[in-house]
Length: 281
Image (cartoon, rainbow, N blue to C red):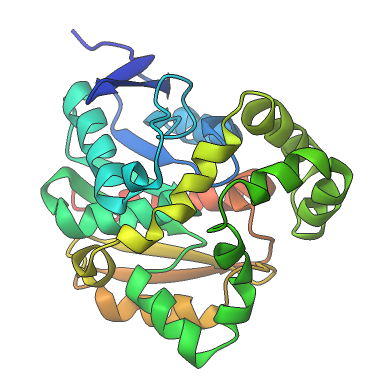
């Protein structure tokens, strides 16, 4: 008998999970990005559920209230990947279809490279393959667009500024295309719950990233989704990502901002369904 999951545990941490859709449907694991929770994927997963897919979306390390370890070393990519391994092993329905947006996409790339036996297909939204991202830093305007990653390395200051200069932060997020409802959730789900420092630790854990986490090749079928209005990511990284995929690779370009799961859930759901249903039955 299948089980509906609301939490899973790993290494003494307890993660909240949004498990929805037909309980015996094919499983899609959906990973959110920064500064959001699984709630940002609600419209998208609802469309996938209506198509017959079961979606399992965790609030990841640093976001779930009982999974906020201190110290930036706890947020190295290998830990983030192993959290997803524990989720899939707990659900016991693998291999799964994997979808990730923003930081969730970065985890998905590394997960598919290191644990391909647990992945059937992958859709990476916004963020390109990590090696492609690094190459884009030196061959496009990507470095300039990523300046905030350096600022986030500073201890304490970024979260202090974001908590105290809320009006300016809201205006900055609105300029990136984030909706008013999504901005309100940043306050209620991230700032008000005290998750901001540990959410920022995803950036502060970047110096602990290994070469394998960056350069691993992908053997599973992949769709990478990039958007023309993304202020954080250039087209260069999207164009280079296919060079690191040995499986069937597709690049889809949408007209939209960085926040595609909320802005374009219908178009994104169609791309995910097309990727999943491209497999032989």
